[in-house]
Length: 305
Image (tube, rainbow, N blue to C red; front, side, top):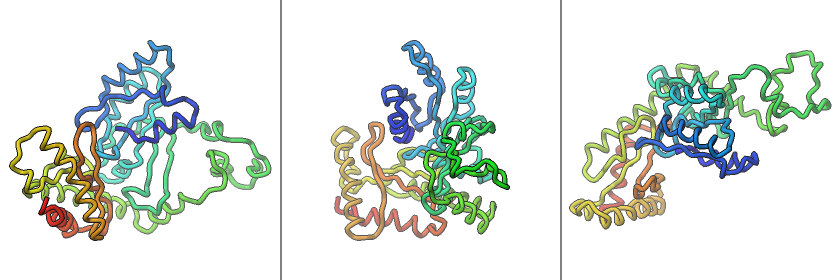
């Protein structure tokens, strides 16, 4: 359930994708701690040296949050670095109502967070938060280029980030988040998260009311995954032929909405499930009327299917 960038990172670092051990997840897409323990033991028996566990707070498709506290227990037991990919779900921490989703994140050694996602900071705006305060990033990345990063400046050079990252010249992405935070305040950012999740809940309840709409599962974040069953399939028996035909529905509806220019909505198969729609609600300008339009438009575009 983790982001594909985990495999890419292993490749870029020279670790090799064959040394990435994937952990089984439950039906909601959450990592199963007992399976993590098994994989750590397996890796050591195979002669490998586990050193890092990457948990996810807000998976891309289902919006799942891994049980961070239990995962942290295992990491502490085996002396493993715990990294949490909270790129998508990290913004829930700003909301007093929804911060429980990230319970245990304070035990992570590092956290990745993208304010350009749920908070809608200008893309790209990413943060890497590290618990270590011993200058770890500088130790890892510094090339000690004295002609750029003089150590005898009149201000505290610990604030210079250029010698703490892979790239040198870069855009001031942090400024985007600072400016947005300054303009909206903590309360404004919290309201943005709360509003998005309230609209997501509204969409879920509307889906439950309408004939032909099936939820894939009850969401815990802003990822709403569902099927639309067109009229011609509603009386079919549940079986291979039904699912084969349903698999073709979402791509056809997507094609029609794009050619019409009415809206854009993603779809995908997932873990043996045939193509389903995935609506992710984040824009503060979206309304309940927009959610109603989304469902109405799907029904309209698929009425002859």
